[in-house]
Image (tube, rainbow, N blue to C red; front, top):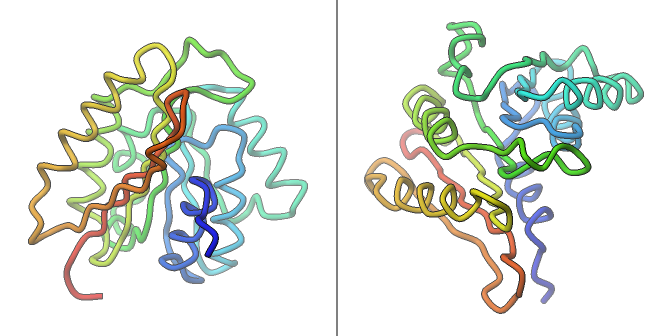
Length: 193
């Protein structure tokens, strides 16, 4: 048996949930790797909506998607993920199948610009209320930076309080690693699939 690392486990979850034609969210596009991965999964009949507050993240993601000839499968917004339902067309809200958040800061970017627990929780709450039954939200929680422990604790409080009749919540982590190893919180919206 080979345990999957955090990023590989997140991708495995995405592959299990996302099908061609789905509407999906990359809530923190960063350097575009998840956006690209999602764009391949949804194929030409689906669509990826991506969010980031840093202009450089949008530039890098557009560059990556263009180089792979997949830019037409994505719409990128230079805004925080808490605005997710404000900018995605209303008729698509109930068709959102998954969202992935990589929390912390932009790798190779400005480490002082970090995700905030209040905006992340707003985004997650809005998505859970509106996304399709059977939909999944994946939070990859990096917390080894200034403000990271505050976000980690707030997210754990929020997600453990979700009603088990409405949501399955999973935490995937390696418990013997040093230096604040990242972990995953995956939330599945229960109901008819």
